[in-house]
Image 1 (cartoon, rainbow, N blue to C red):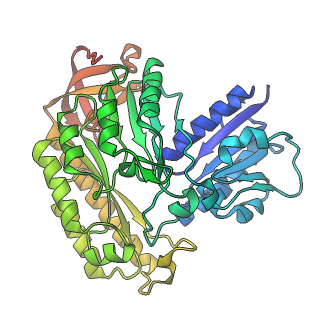
Image 2 (image 1 turned 90 degrees about the vertical axis):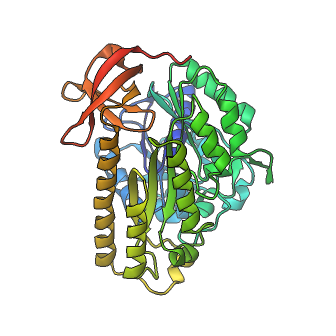
Length: 440
């Protein structure tokens, strides 16, 4: 039996797609093994959001060949769609598959003979058209990432995703519901809904057929799943209707991840984002008004062309005054073929680094304040199978990471606990207060 190993760079959507590609190999008679287990085939699923991700791809190829010098190396994902020729020139790479080809990978890998020149199978992203390919992660009994939407119609000036994944397109509500039921029957308790622009769910064949609110209302009726989590949603698509529904839901948890990118209206305009900061503030305030314990995560980019120190301090103060729970901070990375490459006012690397550092410190402060606000409260925790130094971990509905003494009986169980104190590592120590909670 031939062996295949995978490595995934980038977002939750990539993880769901890697898992689905893995099932294609299993169906074809391959055995999936760990990366270090000298596989016959290595599949590297790439990201291209930052320059760092491109460099990381090269490093992963080298590592794979250390473990298995004769392995057949195939690169898929966003980087593969955008720069196939560049990847083909990386020493050791045997095949590059574009966005439309990656789900046909088993068809293309017919001979594992390494040849002097890498094969490229990649068509223009416009050829992908309206084709939506479903995907979900599998193997973690606790949580599954379920892809419901792909592509993006938002041409932000810094982003290559529309070039790498094409236009917005979605699965049908019936298909998503059926897949959620199937996943739940396998023993999974939580589904994380993922997509490139998740809130834009509902476009098929270039026409809007449904809305995101229609999807989550349908999923609320899925008895086989305890929890649904929304991975990331644009502030202009996070409607009051969605917020109010989550607040009253038994299944959808009080946790939102809402990209901001900048707290300066000037920079938001240069980025070509579809909102200004007042709208963002309104969304956060409404969430906290009706869900005081809701966890809110924020994406921010520092060092965008034209960002002055005053603009950055605008962002810093805006975030400092918002009732949010944590930040994901990115330093602007110039991507080829995006309008941002031609913009004036480039920010020095050292300046961007300092801004990044300041926001990371602010994020730690926000997270600690949020966790501290939860001490003494009772919550339901879904525990995971991750024994570390005699302890296991899990997450509350509102995304507080908790730590408890390992007990194999608690794995993949929802337990009622009381949050009692923070550990030096910033995790929540808990005390169990009841038997497992069964929500279906």
